[in-house]
Length: 478
Image 1 (cartoon, rainbow, N blue to C red):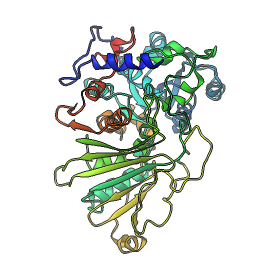
Image 2: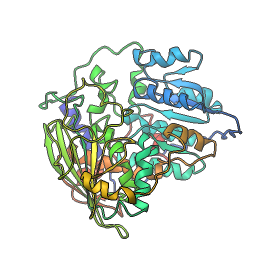
Image 3: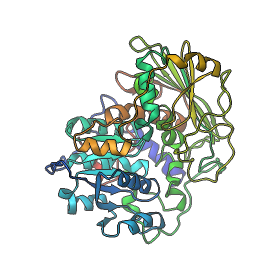
Image 4: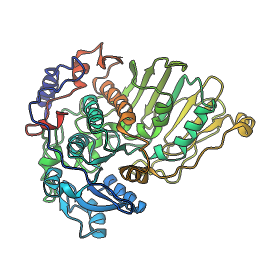
């Protein structure tokens, strides 16, 4: 896609009015037909279809297998047979294989209870919408979707099919951090929070790229294993290049959500839920090194401003990414944050020395907390204050299930998911707003009641985004 195509994309998006409460835009397709949901009886395993089985999707497959609660009934990947899919295929050689999720559902829909979706961000939406319409429980990787409106429609579909279980894959929501934050908030340990710092300063895939880029990379030969057409989903087709696939999609505004969409759900999720932050009223772009129209900045700083809620004061979350964009540290921080050994390192790049691992700092009226990512628990700083508080800290319950087992047990009716769309949706929309600020290099004012951007017409229209590709319109109809 060249410069003219980029302008055409923005022009097309501008033609889509986001006025009103996100109507069924330009859609005339009939709703997808439903398939009766199978009853999961005691002792049964959840019949799970896995869509995306390489890279992160493959890791998710193995995590589901470890629970002992899932039976794999179908594997689907647009690059089936490529190197990244082989470990799963070798381990489960007899599971039926597909490259198009639509064909998988056509052939095996009545044999599937639930789906695991571990595909690039831009493809989350249509697969999720079809799965829910067909009566399937859904576990989808974070963030939920690439555009604000897609997340809105996913939440709407989940409400419509309220008998179905949904879960976003922010694994820390089922580990120590989740239960500690809830317990400390309920006990009044975490209170009167006015500011949160979240930082992810490791090297990213696009760091060092030419920021004067004027087009997408030149076309390369499409691998024989790859269904390049289906890979695009709802997004306008691009010429194939290796820097658009296998995690590289995260670099581009057309496909991914950058560092914020990748790590935000592991850093601010519990604060967002238990402080009941909802959606911000303002997003300030404080830094955007190497800004361009195609891929994410080399470093960025974003401030999300949330109003007073109930008895809780207004709160700002400031996000830092980029290797040279370290946040200021409070007195008594005491060196690097603790790192959970189970946290995966930032993928796709060689390990590099960093002053801080991914983490967060939470500023309350009386106490300050620091913590790492995913399930890593918080500690009170400085250490002297932590020692004073030690005897007054409440006991934190142990998680009864990890994030994958929680989903499968919820499919069985034994638990409720901890990151259902009703909670994960607004968090994902925070990221969507941040990415719009990054992409357009501007501050945004957002009306939380009407869900409109009030100071930038183009940004408001991009809440909906460009029209879907021909043949993919039906997924926008709830």
